[in-house]
Length: 127
Image (cartoon, rainbow, N blue to C red; front, side, top):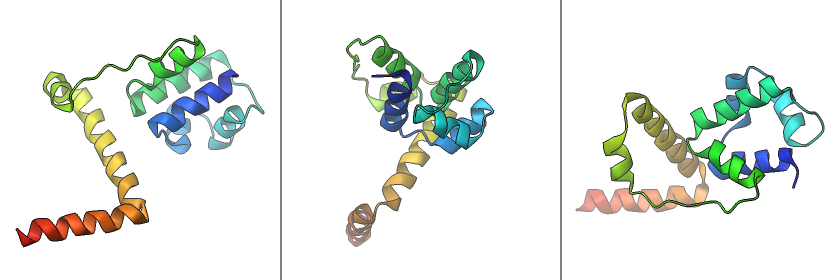
């Protein structure tokens, strides 16, 4: 696979939105789209900014990309969410809360999930 394909794979796996990443990296969404599709390359400085932005938006995504790039097996360390929260500093807590918000928003936008949540809410209210 080519670098742009691996980069796209990492973005997709971690749910990173191009609009947010482009803003953090200081490039246009069109420029990022062109890079992801393999139609345009980015400078080393922009590439570094993209990797840093990826990591800010989704911690662990940069490491995942690097592992893909090195063609190494992606190590999955099983850590409980409670352990992560207990050991998090203030900045990491901000990132955790943002990630939870993004996940919640994504789940709420899925029509099939809306019905499941409504049933859960109704069950909880009935109790």
